[in-house]
Image (cartoon, rainbow, N blue to C red):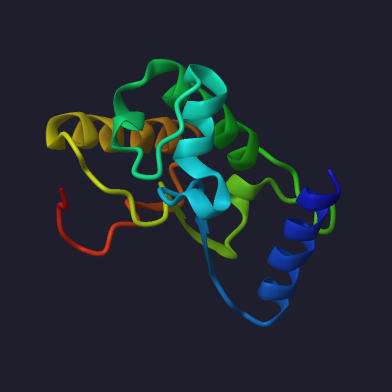
Length: 135
């Protein structure tokens, strides 16, 4: 909870400065846990280049549960739900996700974006890639 309250404070301080946030929901790279950590929790896999994340049901469900938690969080500083907070400009699916199998990756993008938009139709959703499909 202490970590969440730090994010609450950060978002409120951004609001006071008329700034906008892009909230990144996960990370492809292992230095922050990210996809690789989730794969290790559920499948015992250790992978520094975890492109198989997108097709793993338990892993993607874990991320969706986290997304539901954060999108519906009530800020302890200003009382707003994150999904109603105009300080948040967009939800970013992940930091620099790599595609691996393009069809599975694109399905994951579509499914995850729909999951977010079903709960929060007011904010933008971005992929987080550097601008091209990578392999």
